[in-house]
Image (cartoon, rainbow, N blue to C red; front, side, top):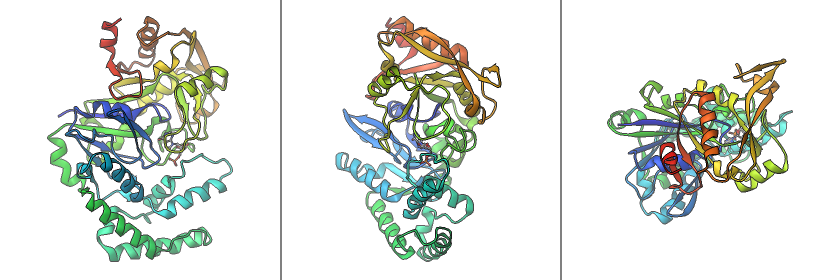
Length: 417
Ligand code: IMP
């Protein structure tokens, strides 16, 4: 009956997919609760690589099942594509997934709007172009389409007509694909999902099931990209924090652990403040060794050093109770590693930013620690101890490679030294 949330503790791309996939065998349900196909969760199954954008990272030939919760925005075309690709290797896998009919849909228009809006912005956000912002905007402005509307075709058509009418005024006729076409496409996709065996089941119907079994909640992006508390406006539009589990009917008080995944260094993709960013031959080497290119867009990620003020902020905002550290092996061989211990803001060094705005004006204060030849070396242990003492959150697991089983507990690592 364990319930654990796994969230990103930085700006996303910390390796959550792999971590979730590793733990997946211990849980009956893996639940995505926010975000959409902007996420790119890379997992290896029997040495074969899969990138899930929407699907929860279940073990496809294991007993666990996946749930797409109502806090998500779902592009049905993408979902069908991912399921069909997985079903080619694991026939019948579609029946392992259920989607809450309350999810909002990402429509073809949303992707067009995403691109148009980025062009209109004085300071573009660098979105993934997956229609995430416009889909969440339509949810908040009450124009959105939910999955359940696909089961009332009359209502679906009326809502699409009305939304199209408004959008054509707002976007001066620039959107293509009239509502009748969108409706027909959505119905086709609904039917393909049904054929794949996917169930449409709400969190209300799942309430007793979830409460009588083990559930792993898989976060998307990272706390510093959260709509409310990330580095606004350079954020995504969904919740990236553990409290997003409320969209699946849970309270954070019901969680046994909120595991923050942290990369041993920091990356960010897209625009926005990044106090510890460094563009040097050292960080370029980290980008190459760490294959720091977006799983969704292929864009090179910006690279910098570990940022403890940012981690402290994430730990408080998202109630982190443990850390999983990833990609420390990428730093193997560096003579020293820099770690930001404080932010200088208006001439005063602070341990933690008070507001998201502080990230924009902070100057990083660094210490330099000795590097390690391999993650079995005592200097890596000291690095982890330093993080734990500085952030007051224990590191429980270490991921030392991209494959699912390249992971161990910190205790085991110490024993093996
Ligand atoms: P959007 O979510 O596509 O609207 O993009 C907003 C910002 O969040 C951009 O800077 C994206 O690069 C970033 N972003 C969105 N999803 C991810 C992710 O899964 N990992 C890292 N960055 C992301």
